[in-house]
Length: 271
Image (cartoon, rainbow, N blue to C red):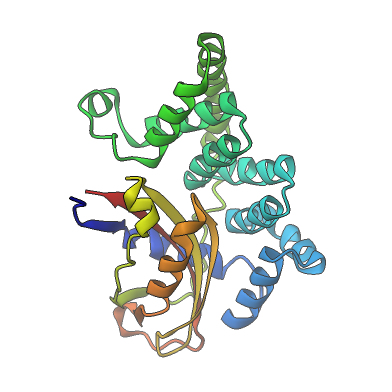
C-alpha cells in the first residue's frame, strides 16, 4: 500500500527570497517577471539584460543557469549555479549536485551533494537517519552506487576544496541573496493549496523538489507561475497547478502600490 505523501514547504524562505527577486530587475513587478521569464525561455536580449544585474542578485544566476541548462549548455549552466552558490544561495548547491548527476559527472555531483548535506545536518543526525529523506542524500547514494573507490576519494577531496572556496567568499560578507530594499512590502501566504504527489514518482518512491517564480497582483492573487528548475519534470505540473491557487496578503497590513514577484521552493517528501 502507498502511504500519504505531503510536500514540505517552508514559508520563511518565501519571504526572504521574495525580496531578492523584487530587487533583481528594475521596473514594476509585471515588467520584472516578463523579463525574467523571457530570459528563462532563452531570449538572448533578455538574458543579456539579466546578466548585467547578475553580480548583485543570485536569483538572476538561477534564471541564466536554468535557461542554459534547458539549452543543454551544461558547462555554462554550472558556471551560473556556482556563482549563485558563491553569492550565498545554498539551494544552488543542491542544483549543482543534480545537474552534475544528470550530466554523469559523478565526482562533482557527489562533492556538491556532500556540501549540501553537511550544511543542513551534523554527523549525529546523518548517522541517526535524519537525513535519509533529504534530496542531497538521495543524490549521494545514487552516485555511490556508480562510483569506484578512487572516484569517491576524489570527490571527498573536491568537496573540501569547494567548501573552502565558499567559506572564503561568505566570510567576506558578500551575500547577494539576502539583500533587500527598504521600500519593499513583504507578503505572507493566506491560503496554500498542497500539490498532488505525481503518481509516477510515488510508484518509484522518489522524492523531489521544484524552484518556481510567481507573479501576484495587488490583491495578492497569483497571476502567473513559472517553474525555474526541478529535480524531475514530473514535479513541475502539480507544482504549477497548486501555486496558481495560492493567495497572499501584505504583511502588517501595508497597502502595496504594486504586485510582487516571489520565488518559492517546494520539496516533495514521501512519508
